[in-house]
Length: 117
Length: 110
Image 1: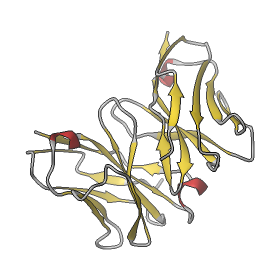
Image 2 (image 1 turned 90 degrees about the vertical axis):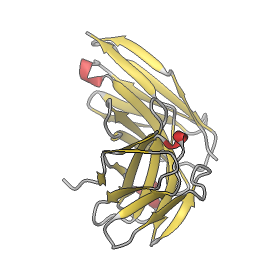
Image 3 (image 1 turned 120 degrees about the vertical axis):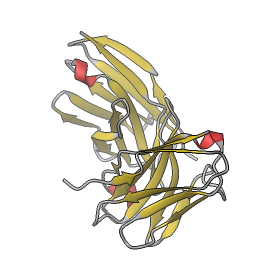
Image 4 (image 1 turned 30 degrees about the horizontal axis):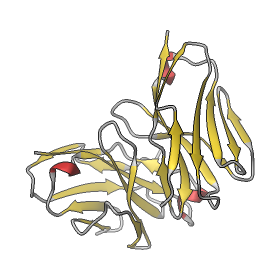
């Protein structure tokens, strides 16, 4: 069964460093997402991406964050200068049908745990 | 943005009993309401979903009910088993994304 894959599974970084989290969405999916989950809390929307551009972003997704689909398969989240409060599990997700999550299941990757020291 | 209220935050039941988790929302435009189960350290996984054109959907021991007028939807798990222990999140479609509730920690005691 196709899966969303994410790397790395865990990254430890120093405050102020840049981090890139990588995702390979399911190949025929059209919408891609990044969500964040701080330990013990809810899953929070960061950004959605469709047709090679951001379609929506949350207040959390400030100028320190960026997303890119550099080669047609990878979907990356970059945090330019990490802060302690960026420590969280970051989930990539994708959905297959045009029209977004309201027409199909959202498939999540296993997550990338980011620890900022 | 849209907010989803989920209750209770924790729920302990005896094995074999039923569990009910409820979510309320305010945006009447939402038409898709999924429920996700998240085991410790793992990804959220869809267990059941419902669209606004139906009031109830059932899949074996799991059912979801939707009341669009009152703007609430509920997850019902019958004959609970220890492996049902997990965090359950309700969600709804808002724009082109899902908005999640705060989660319910379900503990099934054997």
